[in-house]
Amino acid sequence: MKKLISLLITSIIIAACSGEKQSSTSALLQAEDLDGLKVQKDEKIQQMNALKKELNQINQAILTLDPDEKLPLITTIKLAPENFNHHIEVQGNIQTRQNVLLYPEFNGSLKQVFVQEGQKVKKGALLAQIDDAGLKNQLEQLEIQSNLSKTIYERYQRLWDKNIGSEMELLKAKTTYEAQLKSIAQLKKQLLRTQIRAPFSGTIDEIIANTGANLMPGQTPVLRVVNLDEMYIEANIPERYVSDIKLGTDALVEIPMLGKTYATQIRQTGSFINPNNRSFRVEAPLANTDGDIKPNLSCKLKIKDYNNSSAIMIPLSIIKENAKGDKYIFKLKPGNKQDVYTTEKVFIELGKKSMEKVEVTGGIAPGTLIVNEGAAIVEDNQRVRNIQ
View 1 (cartoon, rainbow, N blue to C red):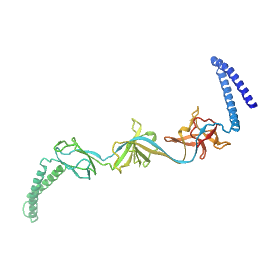
View 2 (cartoon, rainbow, N blue to C red; view 1 turned 180 degrees about the horizontal axis):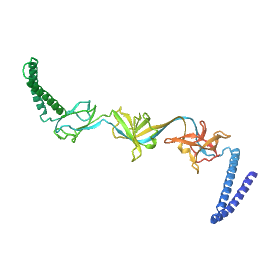
View 3 (tube, helix red, strand yellow; view 1 turned 180 degrees about the vertical axis):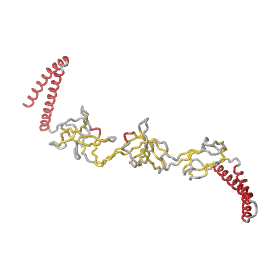
View 4 (cartoon, one colour; view 1 turned 60 degrees about the vertical axis):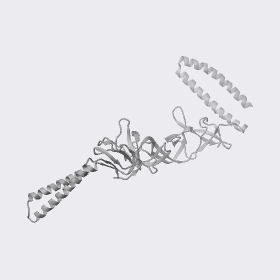
């Protein structure tokens, strides 16, 4: 009872002093007395510290007198080392180098298409035929003439070997024959240009030109062939990461539309910094074993730039900050009752972070018990109850 009367008297005195100080504060503010305001600030801080100390004494007394005291409820985390991978996350674009529109090399009408959309083809397979405008007939006639020229040339050669006949006649026959052989080779090349063949093994994705359509070399697309077995992802990385990403760096590819994640490695890094967005290009292969991945699908590329196999990780939500920007959390000291602890403010140093957690690089050791849920409502040197 004497303690309570003493506390009441103390409170009355503080209240009276507060009234005097309030008027004094108004006078100091009106007078713009900087030195006086600083002195008053120090006095009020001393008063607050005294009140906190007194409050702690009251809390301790209540703990002794009232076993059912209501304390702030918290949950705890016991810090333990864990493996931590940090990733650089950027938007990526899925591509394949085997995705081409085939154009004709010969001017003429589309005579026949030998494949259907969705059909798989091998490299070199004949896909379409363009009307050769009589080139095949010309080739056959030229081959007949060439056979005759060959016979004449060989006959002159046998006679010449026996020292019979004219050397001029021999050379003339030889020239005629060789000229016809060159013409035949030329016609065969032209005939090859009337055929459209698969440049690689893949799938006929689309047939664009119709049979009978007039085709212009390099202008009229005929069909599209794609191969989705070997895909790759490309992305632009900010230049500040240029020293963190090397060939062989592990990475993950997330494709939201498919709900899948694929593991890969960086196989190419650009040697050029784009002056417009200060970034460089990276490329990573993407195995399309199930055939679900399509070119130009939206995806995220996560490149691992840091690993710590024994990192101390804490939730971002429990970190608090003072006026100077220093980060701190609350660790727990056991009390004199089960599940009752006293908080202690601990300043910490932070490293890299993930979506929900951050690495602690200094200020606290593994095995420490810290406040988890309830960190926002507790204060330093406050008694709390663990409800886990």
